[in-house]
Image 1 (cartoon, one colour):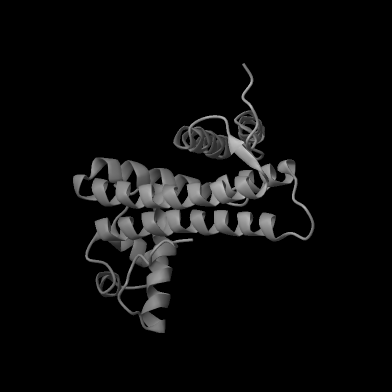
Image 2 (cartoon, helix red, strand yellow):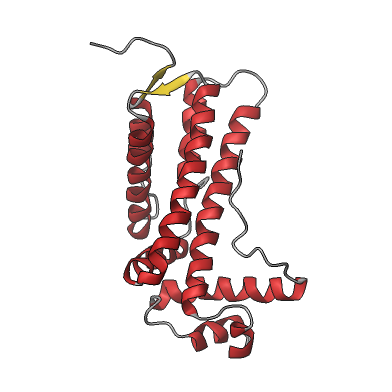
Amino acid sequence: MTHVVDVDPAPLTARRTLTRDRLLAAASSVFAESGIIGASVEEVCEAAGFTRGAFYSNFADKDELVLVLIQQSIAGQYAAAEQAIAEATSAPGRVDAEDLVSHALAAFVSAGRPARESILTEQELLLYAARRPALREPYLAFVAECDRQLAGLIGDALRFAGLEFTLPFDQAIGLLTGAHRQVQIQALFADEPDTRLMHSLLMAITRPAGSTPAP
């Protein structure tokens, strides 16, 4: 299975990695609270406990920081999906369809309910990339690659359980992704978002592999 490439291929020292991680974590919190457009580099630096010099030694500008956050967020979701599917397919004994569905569902919701701050940050990143022409292409390219890898994981898991989609594969993944977004929106306003929609949808669009479609 192909993995998401590192968002920064240049080698990093341990100290620079720590600084970079603190800046990214601080930016995520600040963006969730104030929005990306409303937040300044100074606010991010203050939240991380660094100077502007530390920021600009790691990122050319706020746009580059945003792109790295986008890539980090999507790569994190992929890693969660990979772990969930790996656990399902490596469990001792036979994994039945219902168990597989539960693990596939966990993969699409990032192995659990994400924190409200994370959801807000993700929405801010999406909107900012949509408004900044320079970020649209790299954002869409990275999302497409991660979607491709996630689709591969789900496809492997369904084959392991002897299931197949009743719809064209890309349409089924699109529907599940849409249901995932709905769960995220619910999580912004409710302590317990309802994941039954995704579960019901996944059960409705799968069948035993090789079975004859109903007339």
